Amino acid sequence: MAVATTEYTAHETDIPGLLIFDVTSVGDERGYFQEKFQKAKLVAAGLPESFNIVQNSISYNKEIGVTRGFHAEPWDKYISVVTGKVFAAYVDLRVGEGFGRVVSLEITPNTAVFLPQGVANAFQTLEPDTYYLYSVNAHWSADNYDKYSFVNLADPTLNVQWPVNLEEATVSDRDRNHPELKDVEPMKVA
Image (cartoon, rainbow, N blue to C red; front, top):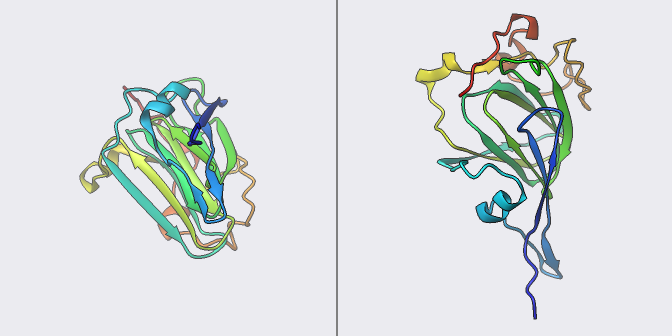
């Protein structure tokens, strides 16, 4: 008898290197089981083999409308939701013709995203008690903060259609005051 396991199906996006994965789970009357990250299966589905996790971080978000981002760092991320649902938006901040290109989607426990370095991510919670998990291949450091790029969530040139109006959303002062895209220097990535 074959045992059912998690399967991953990758989808390319309009931002080169940004991949969206459908992630199955195996359920019964007890609940469900899911491999949140299984490298061999993900590589077979399209994840870069060179992606090696050095840190997992979780963002707990109490209310609907908690909004975080846009942040781009010089490392790759694998993003998933443990419980809840988010509206996610990504902006390519890398040097090149894709600079400023936006992709958005909803992420549930059955969705994951691979985010290449230099692509900024932001999300807004659509359900209370949402746990947003991200795995990275380099450590965050306050000493390297000047190497990170940011863009304003409300930038009109990005035209992100946030489900909860940003005036009503819970947003940190730092995230509210990021520069507009026209003032962001494109990020050089390796």
